[in-house]
Length: 570
Image (tube, rainbow, N blue to C red; front, side):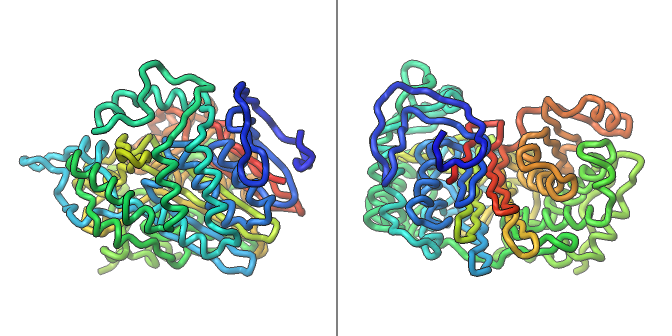
């Protein structure tokens, strides 16, 4: 074990028998690497969805970079080693708490192209054609990730060329894929063939297997253009030509003007108090967590959750009803505030919360047919999340996405990166659910230049005004409920970060009216909830939560057991 890892580290070893080469200042072997589910350290930590990306970020911290430097390097590495969700063809959100006390909220969410229209996915009879909103280039919003990286750079210390070089090396020279990545690439072979006009590197005549080397020369060249020309190296010039060429070959609608005019936006973070000691910082709209998380936390604030206990029947019942109430409001009221007047202050106000909680009956399940949105006076779940904390006291929480697994399944020919299928996050038609079952209405209708509503909820918690938790997760509409449950587990149930990440999750989103649970969710609790009137549905993993906890002079970083998620630090 490395001497820099000063406390116990849980390891799962992946062994690949190929030579290493040098990245940046420290040797990182892209063919032989380990997954560390938990690390405790004192200087700085990174936890992300892939071990190589976490190693790249931690290496930047060791070289004197701050959390923003490490975040940029990690994000770029994920675009190479985690193609199912890591990206330069998608978008996302960042919440940061800087060492000087400044809170930063950065919106690099994708936007609808200029040629997009409200009814663009409806057929002649007005029926929703969700295949078009979920697959191929017509499903793609204007990518925001690269613009976001350069906005993040304002708070970084090291040159961008140093931060992007590990990603270039990983793309150009290759890395050994994990078993889970092999499964993902194999699962989408038919889609890669169907939705690409030029055969992408992901298509292989024989099945991918653990240890295979993935080399992405076109992506490396695209990253080099970004390295040499900044954001213009993506939104203008050769890369823009390649994107537009792909649009023309496959009936997409993103234009040169859409690319050139895209801007990432710094927004006012959502900041609210929870009880006496905690301040929670999260992302505002179009990230729905900026409304739902304060709603849900305020709804439980005066409830005796601690006495109920973790995943007791009473606790799950209360938290489910709180989720139901919030997601009903999401469906009606939430969208891009630049295009639609969203009553955020009212939705998160104490009088409104009190009124909504009158619908909560401690003795039985609610009913979504009867419980709708409140009355207001005149987000494969292949998102990815990572956290960074540094020795200077900077904390960064970033969630970034292509939307579905491998996004639109379309790789830009000659550029080597996948485009998102984020247009499906709009309300294609009122009342018609998207791929995650979420419904919406006028607030989230498609309009040119509009940002689609997201479930992403990057979050930082301060305790006594100092960073305490850095948290987030992928998972489509389960994102906000997973963040909510993680905060409750740690703050109310005094659970360790490791247990809060790995214990079974549950989820309710108003419609469909059922509680989704993971397979290891207690059977006895399921049975009692069914007696109360709930429909219980078992599903696959809910999210992949990443947490960094800072307490008692120690940094604890935890990667979710549900994937290849890895914590690194020193």
